[in-house]
Image 1 (cartoon, rainbow, N blue to C red):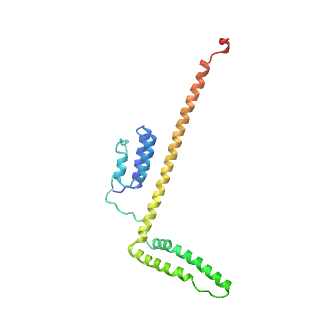
Image 2: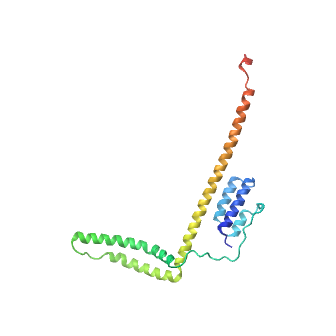
Length: 201
């Protein structure tokens, strides 16, 4: 059964608690956190916390029922965006070759052979077939779903980077605090053990 973003966040929170309690070291935490955001099913998430006790009040991710595909987009707007994605390279290329042909014709003072048709014709025919078959087979919906998956993966990567950055800042702050405490203790005790020059003389 596929897991949702909220389930991955819940597992990431359990891992963070386990790190604070000392059940995981930093390397294990970082490794499991990466696997958490890369997990797609409840089984993969469960394996990451199977050896950790659940915190009080924690909700273990469980399947909510049969997986239902989330509608991404629908309607004419989706089809228009898909058509723009398919035909945009053709429109750009044809516009460029038409401009070159027009400038060449103006420079020569007569209409030259319309060679841009060899660029626009075969390519346009291929795209026309792809458009018809794509609309018949529901390709715009698959295209939109793939775009949504890529967007979610980027969001998960950004969240992982933020988590790592926050953890690194927390670790550096703890180390700085310990270092300051040790330095203060050694400087405070140093004068008590330093012999006086008069005693040496």
